[in-house]
Image 1 (cartoon, rainbow, N blue to C red):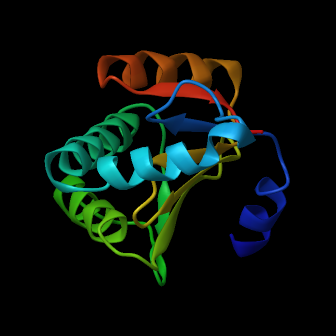
Image 2 (cartoon, helix red, strand yellow; image 1 turned 180 degrees about the horizontal axis):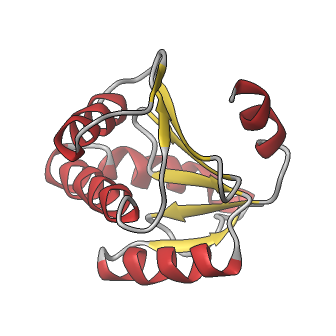
Length: 143
């Protein structure tokens, strides 16, 4: 599975983000202020919960294995929600969700305002677009 993850990390990436487009370098300083604002209090809790809801809903459509310090293949939805929240709340943790059948990889990083999705088919992107939109988030190609 680790080899597949390494391979998928080289594929096209899209992100679910709190912003609809990449920020121009001229506005980088302002972006960091905005990012800091959204990583605090209620804003961060709302975004974290949105990420959890999206990732849990995906479980209804795709079979994932989860890497969080070790590979997990058998987990409850409640256990997965706790794992995701723990990673998102940490400043130095990450986890991967791998769907081997569809060669789909989702990377979750602590204190990040986006999720990275590698090798997503058009069907996956369409589904994620619907879910992200419902949560007030955006999906776009990574640049």
